[in-house]
Image (cartoon, rainbow, N blue to C red; front, side, top):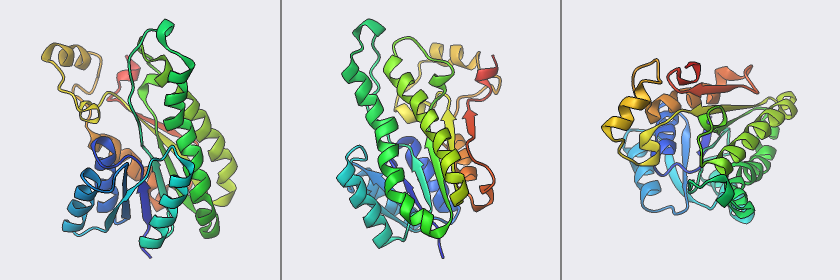
Length: 246
C-alpha cells in the first residue's frame, strides 16, 4: 500500500520542495495551505502531471477543529497518514528585545509548538494502529545562531526542539520516530533576493561555499521520512553547509 505524507505549509517555498521530493520517493502527498486553491492546487497538479499522487487540502494548522478535519480529509482521500512533516510557518518580524511582547511570543509558539502538538495528537491514532510512523519537524539554525531581533522566533524554535525530543522518547516504543531538520539560511524559503554584498558576506561563513537550496533540506527530510530510517529517532540534522562549524 502506498505510504501517505502530510506536509504542512507546503503550497510554496521550502514545503513545496519537500512535497515534490516525497512524491518522487513514491509517497502520496497531501499538500497543505490556508487555501486549497492557488499554490496548493497548482503544486498538487504538478506532482500528478509528473506521475505522482497528490491532493491539496486547506487548513489553518494552528486551529484545532481545522487540524482534526484536515487529518480526517487526508485519510479519507489518500489514506491514513504515515509521514507528518511539520513545516508550516507564519510571519517572523524582526524587533529589538525591548519591543517584543508576550503576544509576539504567543504568535510564534502557535506555529512552532501549538500546531505540532495539535497535528501529532490528530495523526497518532492512525500511526499507533499501524505500529509505525514518521514525524519530521522543520526547525531552524537560529536556535544555534540566534541573530539580534529574532527573540520570539528563536525561543519558539527552541521549544519546538524540546517537543520533538520528548515526543521521540515517548513514541519510540510505538514504532513512531520523531526527528528534526534545521535549515540554514535558504533565500528561496523567505522569497527574497539576496544583495551581492550580503551574499558574499554570508558565503564567507559557509565552508561549502554556496547558498543552500530548498532541495538540500528536502533530501534530509526524505531520509527521516523513509521506511529505512526506523531506527533513527530523537535526532536533528542541521543543513547549513557547515556554517555552524565556523
